[in-house]
Structures are given as structure tokens and as C-alpha cells.
Length: 455
Image 1 (cartoon, rainbow, N blue to C red):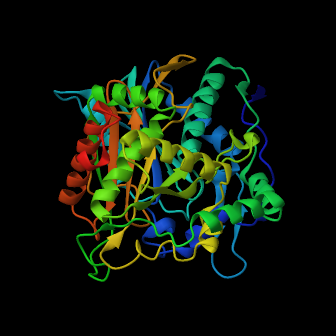
Image 2: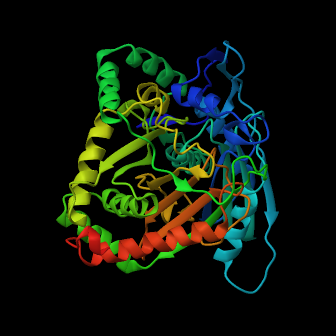
Image 3: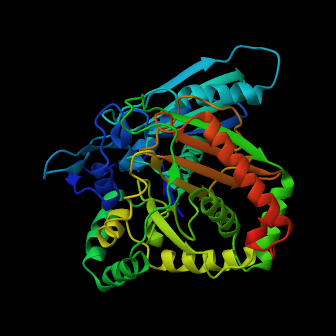
């Protein structure tokens, strides 16, 4: 582990966009919405227990921006000269206020604060691209909400940010160097990506996707509203909790099918899409961390890849068969991972059905980060990620299109969130979809050998 304490920042400079960011340009909706708008953010909440010093927290945030240059990188996205521009370090805004004392759960009050932060615009034109809100219940109990723009930070990165912030804070409190691994920088990933794209491994991956997605279409779900209706496009989030029996059942079926929890849950979701679309050739989108080099595991940036998983159900008789098909699909896709615009170049009609009027895609992911700080002491503070949020919200972190489900196995139960564009879907439709998924999952976890015609 390397020792750091507010390390010296690399000099400012320009470098190309990554392919992930180039795809965002394809779906650019301007300054007010979409992937470059002020709600395309990642927001997380952590409970802090212990004697919190606000000045030291501000200093640690400053150190964080020095350490990770993605947090001070702006995007120039217009014309052929689109690029990233690293700026010098500046101080992130830390908004501190005391939370009112009231009857009831502090956990609920903490959720309300994080929801409020998530509903607050955070433009990508500001640097640094991270901000913080600290709400204090008392001298030893607080909630910290961190916001970062999604063009600079992905879900994995957000866990790195809080891990590093906790250690930088503890190091300053104790008057010692911070003990952190070398971070790497996003410009190093972009340089590697450009070289990889010209090599034989990328050619082999392109050939795989060209063959795998021949005549394929993302499986759409029907929207409630026309894309041409002119309705405001905010992103609403519903949150739900599946009982502990669903978590233990998922783990049990994963063991007996040589799969993973993600594969089992995705197999159930594939069956829901089959029922909704009346298709046996299902293409379900998900996300991968996109960190195709181990040295990028400690780098903050936008790495995630949007990956279409094609599952043929025509040869499946039971749910166990579906899990087998999903496992083969996942292994092949992960082995040939590419950024989505590379995949789309090999299957240009892939989005045709999901981008038609009265149709959209519903992406599916299971959160499985090894970095989540769950009740972890660092120095004189204990950091606990707020992983069991249950309060819905009508305006939250934006999706570029369609809908997205997040699931996390977090005992007791499975924690879920369902985000959707309000100009396409109603809350009722999203609730019905979640209920439908729960029904399918309940049936197949009880009997993995159930015949598909009985689900």
C-alpha cells in the first residue's frame, strides 16, 4: 500500500474522451436533461458515528480532489475536438447543517436528506465534480450525502471515493500519511483503451458480438406514454424490499445450478420479459464495471459498460435450464466485453425495437461491490453505507432512457430500486412490473425444476 496525504496533483491537460463518454454523446439531450444534464448524478449516503470534525472533513475532501483527477475534469463535447480537460485542484462544497430533533426514526430522517440531495441539480459545468452535504443529529451521529456527476464517476468509483475519504480524514486527524493504494488516473485508462481497440483481442470481441447479436433486438417493454407526447422527462425512483426468503432462496439456487446470484435473478427477469414480450429470444441489457485492467480497480472514472445479454429460451424446459443458458451467455459476454458503441457498430439494429414509439428498454443489475463500507471503523469514525433505502421519490438521479432496476442481496432480504422516466412510464406500471418479477421469482426459487409452461 502506498502512503498518501494530499499528494501532489498531476498538471492540468487535455486528453480524448473514452468510448463510454463517446456513447453518451450519441444520446446527448442538451444541458438540461439526459447524460450531460444536472440530474445525471450518483448520490450515496453514509451514517457517520463518532466525534466528527467538520474542518478536517473539508480538508479530506480537498485531498480527495487532488488524488483523483476525474473529480476535476471537465468535458468538451462539441464538434470534432471533443475532449477531457483536467483542471487544477479546487475545494468541493461541503454544506453542513443540523438536523431538527423530532420523534421517529433517525434512519428515516437520514433517507429524507439523501433523497433531497438526489433531487437537487448538480451541473457538470462545475468543478470539482463532487459535492457533500453533512446533516448532524448530534455531536456523534451524522449522515453524509455525496454527489458526483455520472460522466466522471460510476458506481464502483463512488465506493472508492468514500473509502479514500474515510482514510484521508483519519490520517489528518491522526497526523500521519494516508495509507492508500496508488490510484491510477482515467487518462491512463483512455490511453490503454485506444491501444486495445487497435489490437487482435478487440477484433475477436467484435466478431463475437457480430455473430452473437445477428438479427437480435433489445427486448422492449411497452410504455404508458408516447415518446412524442411532450411530457416532462424526470426520473422517478421506487424502492422495495423482498423478504429474507428470497435472498436465501437465491443463494441456494445459485449453489445448486453452478450459477451466481446475479445469474439466478437475471434468469427470473428473463422469464418476466418473455411473458411481457411473448418472445423466446430475449435480449436483456445490464451493466459491467468495465474495469478491464486490474490496475484500474482503484481509479475513479466512468468505466461501466452497457452489455446486451441474449438468452434463447426455445431449448429450455425448466428454470434450471434457463439459469444454465444465462450462465453461458454471461460467461461469453464477459469474456468478450466491449464498450456499447463498439457492440452497436456490429449490431446496428439492436436498439430498433426499444427506441420505437410506446417502447423502451428496462436494464437490470445486481449490486455486488466488494468496497461497500458496511459498519466499518476508520480512525475515530464508524462509516455505515445506507444500503436499505425504502423511501420513493418523484425526482432523482436521471436515466438517459427507459427504466433501470437495481437489486442488492443485503440480509435480511433483497433491497431493490426501480427508476423510470416519467414521460414514458407511470408509477403504477413500474409497481406492477416489480410485483410480476416477485411472482416469477417466488415460483422458481421454490422449485428450480418447475416447467416453464407452469410459471
